Image (tube, rainbow, N blue to C red):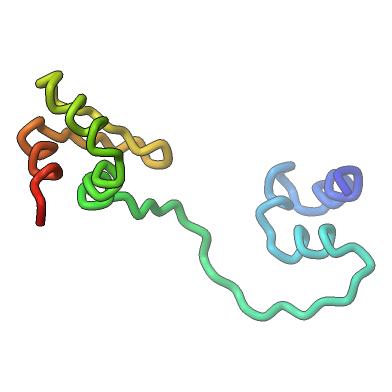
Amino acid sequence: MAARLLERNDHVGHPGNALLHLNVVSDELLHAMPFSPLGETDVRFECWCSRLGVVSALATLPRGEVESLTSAGEVLEIRCDYCTTEYHVAPAELRGLLDES
């Protein structure tokens, strides 16, 4: 497949351009297999992380671990691995997770 893509690059211009064309990639991935495209969508970078999601994840920790985090008295710094957004959670907010609701 890689060799066929490199051969097709000669016809497209810049070597990286062929990899960006949906028709070229789908033709190569499904080489010799019949297929019908169902539609096209734009590809974009998007992360669904949020402060609520971070606090909700912390709420799933065992009670002892949350107590340990609050006793340290330090603000937690949590970074999303996907988009690198940083979230800061204060000990008072963590203590709120320990309250019965």
